[in-house]
Length: 72
Image (cartoon, rainbow, N blue to C red; front, top):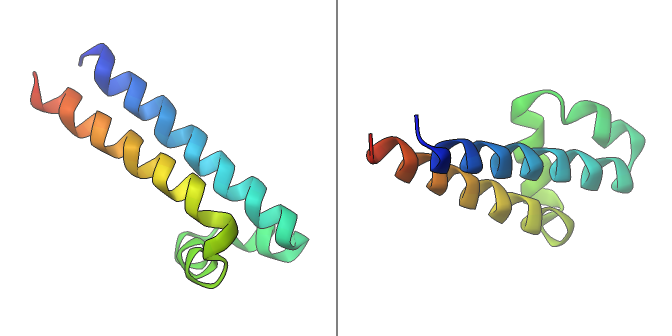
């Protein structure tokens, strides 16, 4: 796999960590609950104002991974 894929993976993981940080800033219970994947989607919908930047960072990482896998 190419370097673009790994760059996208790193950006995707950083976005996920950003989502966890945003959820812990809202509430400790939200932070704990966001380790369950469907709950993090609910957090994204209910707290769009604080979760949109990490979400877009994850989308960017996914696009880079997709492009990196496509060039193989």
